[in-house]
Image (cartoon, rainbow, N blue to C red):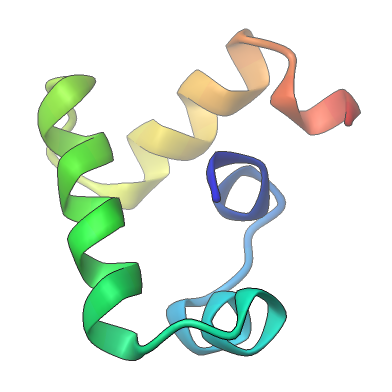
Length: 56
């Protein structure tokens, strides 16, 4: 899911791509925000680029 966030996919695009419910996607994004001490989704994208997820 981190790679999809880094690519700029919306929640609904991630839902369709991974065949998950909206709640599941939101839960995972919330957990990523917490683990990375990020306040917003843009910070997740930055972290993804810095860790090389954008190259996958």
